[in-house]
Image (cartoon, rainbow, N blue to C red):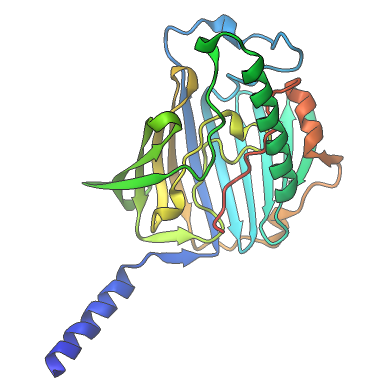
Length: 290
């Protein structure tokens, strides 16, 4: 009996030790690469004929992300050839604010989670009307994918180091429209996880246009932190996201999350004007832990 109790205590201690440590503070550097097919015609990048800017190709190439976490506050700096943006997320208020610097102009927008849901509802309704009016059945698009699509995780025995952390390889398999499946390759570490942040980099962190791109579902099922993932995108593109540096010890000051006062912050719904009608006012904010 004593032997069994000792074994039980030993196993309990091992299981507790094996659990990833959760952090409320961190600085994460991430690189996102969207790779376009070599045979693509560059004319497809030109101005949207409906008016507004064509954002379909805006994220092609490399984008650098730096994410700051402190309790309920998250800030992400983004930099690419298109410009710079800073995304502020207050999880306690369920509020997201984005400051954009593009072509010499600065603009700011905000939205609550409820605002985001309403914008997405309007966008889904608009897309449904477009599908009804399209008489060419070969061009009809399936209904928009939802973030609650069924996902299964398939673990592998492969491991490698990413940014100094031991990582395991897994496949996230998402069931899509009419039984089709999408598979994304994920590398994650079991050494730590972050409260309020499931992953860094990628398209989910970009308000207003995030839902123009496929989202990576099932991250909440991974017990650890995603250090790299690879997934297919529309129009034969491929997205690769990888963490390049992790700092879990440096103090992140609260003033890091102060929103600039010299920029007028407008409702996120006005951001749709930048994309032209129907561009991408869907929302698609950074996904955090619920």
